[in-house]
Image 1: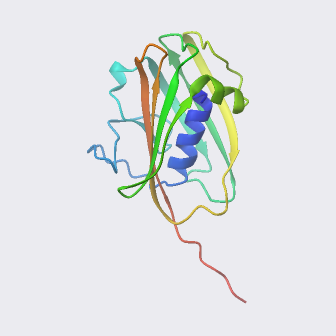
Image 2: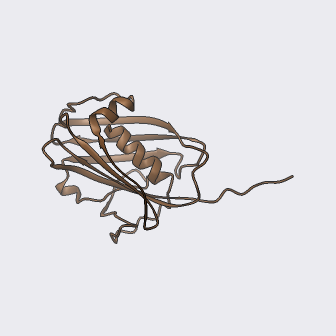
Length: 175
């Protein structure tokens, strides 16, 4: 899955499950170790000093995300290593303590599917991503926590990103 897809999935799943309150006490329900500038619910779940990418900013619009609307994700940073073919993304989506999804994805295949302007090998240096995704109307109410670990082909951890997003029950208007 591409970095933009990773960020999109994280932002969509995390932003779509977003209660923007980031508590830095790390638990399965709150894996955040450090806030990422930009005001989005996406945070580091690894120590930024240990990451092989320095994420400078992640912004999402609208913030918080709204089920049934488009979500624009914009991210920038500096990659300190080349992401090689064979890189993998390990994604876990939770609703409370219940794991809804646990999936390992081929990062390079996913960035092709995401149709962003990067491809493997992703060379070290500055990187920017902008991606719009349509959120389904059927997102159930609840607080979702999405965690995504990106590993290079040599199994080195590039980064761990997480997001916590709360979706409210939609009120039905009757006339």
